[in-house]
Length: 62
View (tube, rainbow, N blue to C red):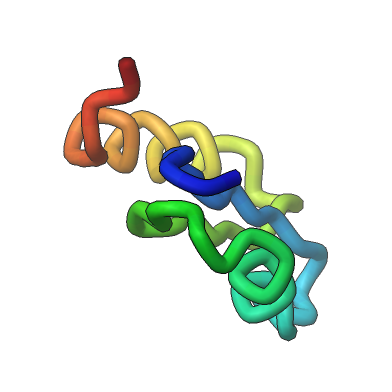
């Protein structure tokens, strides 16, 4: 993953992020991590709005 861009997209059922980000960074230490998207998955309308906003303001993906 050296030199690769990783954009974490994490949904959960209420537990939260847990150790997801540290797990990813441990297994891809050479990757360039972009700001993550984290959302509780059972709120469809709120999820759609949050994902759309995140995509509009997030990094450009080549």
